[in-house]
Length: 264
Image (cartoon, rainbow, N blue to C red; front, side, top):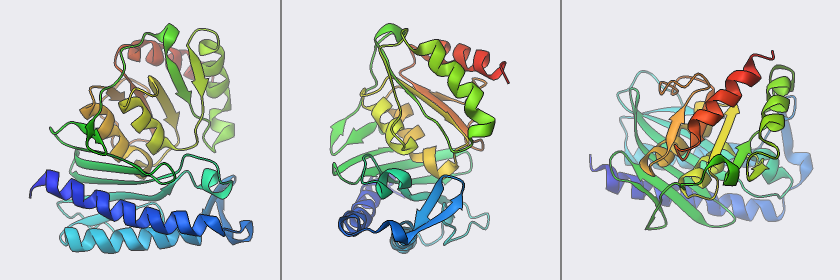
């Protein structure tokens, strides 16, 4: 398997599905929304995008299984597994608010071999393969070198407000006025890519799925950044929480999370 060539082929699959999503957004109606959980939505666009992506990936690597957000394909302990989010940032999409993206990762056991994230409206394709660096449409990516006082942080607010509310309040209180700025963008995949590109310097979220972060995590790591779970472990791939940073501010993010979790 030539992992570089495979990654570039996945970029093509993601862009094709992105064209479909972009066209559907032009005439999208709120009446076409389904509710999965409280404040957690899905539409026929997510489902059709996933079907298209799965079909393309099956041709590309027939022996691989699938872990997908909308459950249109299965994983049966195959050696390789595609981890797919067909539309990350569905709430953004519904409101015609950027960013929203397609996220595709290829894994072998605990190894992330390849990651592709395609931001649909800006037509930007972020990608990485293990040992090959991180790229944005052919240009290499590198994380920033900013300290916390100049850092732009992403502190996301997941749907699980009852479990996470006190943590979120604590994190915002700790960094408001200390960091250079705080943002929420509604797409985990894109936030990770922004860290890799130096557009953000750190980002964290809990209660997310592997399809949300697997591709973006590799893109951050290959761009020189750091990824852990909330306890500081690099064994984050089976969990539902991520801290991503330029490495310089990682300790401060971990300390803030530890303090916030202690408030529960």
